[in-house]
Length: 592
Image (cartoon, rainbow, N blue to C red; front, side, top):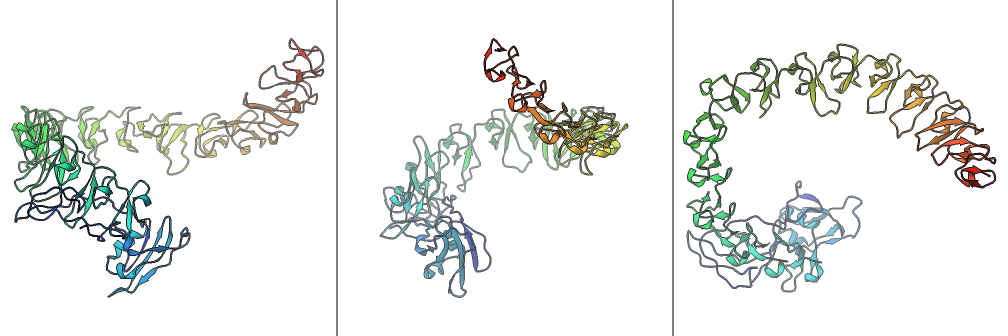
C-alpha cells in the first residue's frame, strides 16, 4: 500500500526557531538516490508507483525497490487570510516540545498564513513546514489541478497539486502526464520520468522504444540508454562503439565513447586517432587527441612524433618550435622557455608577433595582453594605431595608449590635434578633452571654434556646446554659431531642437533662426519640421511661413512643400490649392 510521508520539498533559509517564506518553491524533482544492498527488480505491481516494486534481496546485491511514499503539504491544514500580503504577516506559533516554533509566510494566491495544525507541524523539521507555506495547493482529485495531477489523494485524504511532468513527485503512473513513475530513493521517493535517453528507470519498461534500463550492481535506480556516444554503460557490450569509459568492477557506470577527438579515453586503442592524451602518468583517463603540438600528454607515445614536455600543470606535446609548450630552455629548438601566464610556458625569441608574458621578453619592449591570468601576450612594435592594453602606455613606442572613439578598444596615439587621448599627458599639442578624473575618452584639441570639447575650459571662447554625457564642439557664440543651450550664445538665445545634435545662436529678430516662439524677440516662430528649421516672422507679405495662420493675409503659398512665403492670394498669384487664393479658386496653379 502506498504511504504518505512528509519530507523536504524545498529548502528555505531561516534563523533560530522562526522563519519567513514568501513563495518558496517546491523541488518537484529528485536526484538519482541510490539504494542499499541486494535484489533484482520484479514486475506487475500497481502499488509503489511503478511497474517494478521490488525483488529478492541478498547481501552484496541490488536492493529491493521500496514502496512509494509522498512528501506532501496538505496534512498541515494551513489556513490563510485571503489578502495580498501588502504588510508583514504575523507569525503563527506552536507550543512544540522542547522548544516552541514560529511560522510566518505568504501564499501568492491565498495571503498571509493564519493557522497550522500544530500537532503535525511539531513532528516535522521547521524548514519542511516553511517550504510548504508558499506552495500549498490542496486537492481532492485531478480535476482540482488544471493540467496537473492530484498526488496523495488516497483513502479520502487531501492531496497536493503537482504538474505531473518529468521530475514531478508521484505515487503511481496515474500521477504522471507522460512516462512512468520511477523509484529514485531508498526511502520511497518516486518521480515521473519520460523514458528518454538519460532518464532514470527501474526496469526496461520505463524506457522508450529501442532503449534499455541499465542498472548499477548496487542500486535499483538505473538510466535509460541507447548505447550511443555519451550514454551510460557498464561494459563495452552496452555501447554501439564497443567503447565504455569509466565503468568499474564495483558497479559504477561509465559512458559510451565514439573515440572522436576530445572524447574520453583510457587507452590509445579507444581513440580513432590512436592517441589518448593524459595530463599525468597517474591519470586513469584522458581525452582523444591528434597528438599534435600543445595536445595533453604524460608520455611521448601520446604524441605524434613530438616530445612530451612535463610541467607542473601537466604534460604537453611539443616540437620545441616558437609558441609551443616547454618546461626548460632545453625543450626549445630556438629562443627561450618563458612564462606567458601563471600556468603556461612556451618557446619564444621575443620577435614581433611571437608570444610573451611581459615587456622584457620582447625585443621591442612591448608585450600586448601579457601578464594576465591565462592570457598569452604578443610582442608588438607599439607603432601609432597599433592595438594596446587598456591604459598600458608601455605597449606604445611613444607611451600613449588611448581609448578609441567607439569606447570598445585601445590603440597607440600620435598625440596631435584631433588624435585620441585618455590622459592629459597624451597630447603633444593642445589639451585632452576629458570630462573628469575618471574619463578616458578624449581628443587632443586646440580649443578653436569647431574643435572637440567637453567642458567650457577646453575652448578659447569658454563656450563648449555639448549635450549631457556626450562630447561637444567649441563655439564662438555669435549669431549662426552652434549651440545646445542659451548660455552658449552671446545673445543668450539658442534655437535648438532636442531631435538635433546642435542648434544655432540667434538674435531673435525677424528672419532670425528659431525653433519655437521663445526664440523670437520679434514676431513669432514659423518652424518647418520637414526642413528642420524655422524663422521669426511678423506674417507680412513675403515672410517665411508654414501655415496660413502665420500670415496676416491668411495665405501661405508653399507649392506643396513643407514651407513657403506669405502671399496676398490675389488673382494671378501662384497657388497650389484653393486656400492659397483670396477667391478660393486655383486654376492651373494661378489664383482667379
